Image 1 (tube, rainbow, N blue to C red):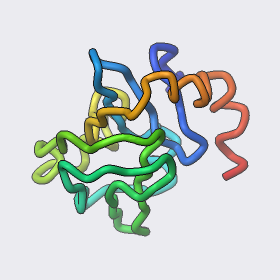
Image 2: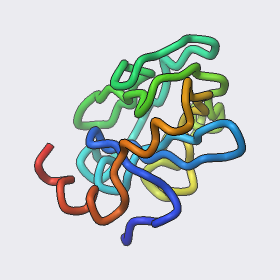
Image 3: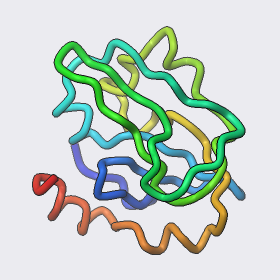
Length: 126
């Protein structure tokens, strides 16, 4: 699956797509492939303020559990509740299925993230 060029990427395998003054955050196809079949997405708390790199929540698969990190500092404003009953959406359509919305402290912080080519070059290093 080719990486969408309309978003940026964190080294920790989250993608970030601006939507107005918010950021949609999900996981990359590479991340979901490494995890395997997802069975749980949760532990996200709306209203919590996170620093860049802080744990925002968790995804669990039949193979492992993995933290999902805030790609930039901000406040979690919404969790995608569809994932509560259908965590497999992250496996079948990782770039259409956002996990949470973040109101960034500064929208300019996303400039420090990776573009698609940069992410593709480093994704196997982590």
